[in-house]
Image (cartoon, rainbow, N blue to C red; front, side, top):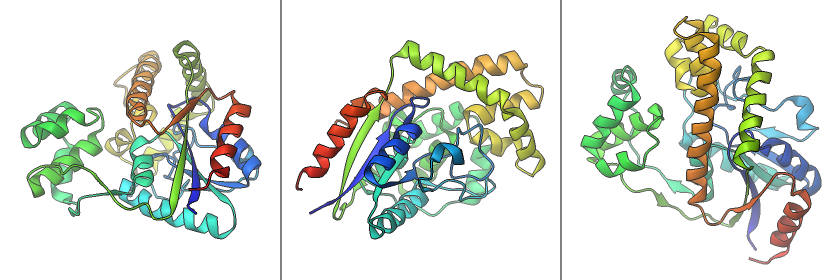
Length: 300
């Protein structure tokens, strides 16, 4: 009989964390964060990190585990998350993966086998000085097919693809490995556009009121370069531009509203390709509970 792992995913600002906590309380679960920024210490307000009070006593994993000066990759996530899943099962609890970083979740659910190409520090430093559009053109010359499918705004992923393509001639198609005795139950939550846009705006203003600008300023003072802060994307990118006097406060807020919405659209595109996901609105608690209970009652 396969061990079942619950996955709560969906676009930003839909209420995934609160739902995951609610389900963990109902099903004796522990939560593993699948968020590419919340793994870093100090990236609290800008990344929307869940607070101790919001955790309601539920154990959370893969939050605040990496120094922001260091690099944490999807390969690292896959390895550590699998270790945490085993630990949680050993305690007799249910692992609940929760987050919006689609590539992290796919790497885990499909046990993606990544190309064994060692990082090239010199190449990365050189490529990091270039803009995303320039990098995309470089990748297009090396591997047009990969360039068409990649997130054109994700510099880190484009750089890694260039690194792989330069070593192997092209970026090989992702292969899925054996998923052992695990079965993933994927729950997607989303909201209508008008409601989600209002939530995004309210959440953004709340983060600014809670000191998001000061958080980014303090990270810079602690030694994170503007380039490094920019690599964390969205809030950290535009607040950094504001702190460097490159944009006004108003431009920062308006740019963030626009870019966060574009990010939501990219998340939706990624997740909608996965037909295994069962979609709900976050208020469908009773229906979600019934669906999960039914899945856990099934013998696989």
